[in-house]
Structure formats: C-alpha cells, structure tokens
Image (cartoon, rainbow, N blue to C red; front, side):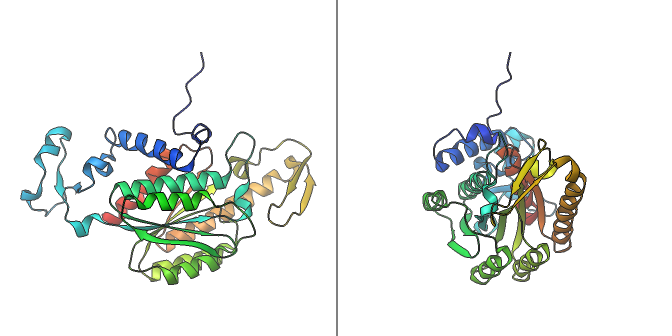
Length: 299
C-alpha cells in the first residue's frame, strides 16, 4: 500500500494550476495546522494577539484564548501588529535549474514568495515584492490591503528566469528605495560573489531593516549525486564541461560547503537570519522559518 503524498510537498503543489491557487492551498492548510502547533499564536485567530511577557498589564490578557489554549496572550495595539515586509526573488537564469523529479529553484522560490506574502497580508502586515536578475526590474512597495495580494501574485506569475546575476547591485538599488524600517526576505540561490552579497545585506542592516536570507538550492547541488559521464552546462553562460562526477564529487562538495558556510557566517556576523532550503522541502517547513524570523523581530 502506497503512502499518501504530503500535501505541502513541492511536486504535489506544482500540479495545481496557477500561482495564486498554489499559494492559497499551502497557506490555508498551513494556518489550519498552526492552531495545533507551537506557532498557533501566528494564525489568523491570533493576528491581533501576542504571548504574554513579564511586565504586561493583566488587564490586557485575553481570558477566552487562555480558556481554549491554557496559554496567556495579550491583546496587541495597532502599532504592535503591523510589519512591513518586502520579499525579494532572484529571477536569474541559474534559478531555472531542476534536477530529475524536482521543481526548479525558480518555481520553488516564486511559490514560497507567494505563500509568504499571502501569510503576511492574512496577518494584516504590509507585503511588497521585488524581482531582479542583472538589475532590479520589478518593485511593488509594501501595502497592507488584503486585495493587494492579487497584484503581487499576478505580477510574480508573469516573471520567467533569464539573463545573468547581479545580486549585490540589485540589492543596493532596492535598499535605497525602501522606505521606513521593515523586514526584507531574500529568496535566491546566491550564485554570485558572496562578499559583495554580504555587503549589500549590510546596506539593509545599516538602514535598520531586519533581513531573512532563504538560500534555495537543488538537492543535487548539495550532494552532487549524478550518474557517470555527465555533461554540465552553465545555464547563464552556456559553457559546458564533460566529466565523471565521481572524480570531482569530493572537491565540489567541499567547495559548496565552504561557499554556504561563508554566507552563513557573514549573515550571522551581521545579525541576518539565514536558512538553506532544498527544493524538495515541504512549503510548510519553509514557512515556519519565516515565522521564526518574524517572531525574533517581535521578541
């Protein structure tokens, strides 16, 4: 007897037609699950509440929620509930890669971005979108109207990965355009100069923005488990290399580990949240990483 497919697995969600439908399916199931998890304080029911902290006035405790959850939550005021967040998606050519049986990095990134924006607007936060390849070619400022999600998703659905990568340059341009302090979520494979990327992230931090980097990779880019006599082609330059993967697997994995470690350490040093996510990771797992980052901002 076969095991049912997990509802939030990327290959399952990919069977749904539109980006909006995929996002709605994931988020509705995700929010339902929040009611039964340690993260239920972020569900739609608690969008105007936060957990009790020492020093909060007892008169603000919501005793109805305590009766249902046996946990203390206090009502938030409007200036506590709203977060401005811009989701930044890498649409460079390298994002089009997909190993056998997996969705492409770009498909994963756009679906994840759509889900995050959908969650934000359900939480009455303000959501914005930025997309780049060799330049920042799309920017929609953060707004908090629930109807805004239609514009965000319809815009994102028209983008296709193309051209090369200029992550640092695009992020610097965006940092100059963003308004008041908020949160920036970068979804990218980060295939660019790591030092320049980290300098661009520092630009956001200098402007007091909180930053979450979601490093999207294909599973084969991590383990390099390819068959013998493979031909590797650079998606952005077209350059090809024929080789026996077993001969370079060890050196490749070491280089990849060092690359990811450098990004991770640089983010840590700048107080930037970093998470590496493979394209076979269920979307609810990735969404929890966003909520963890959001929780750390709220304290």
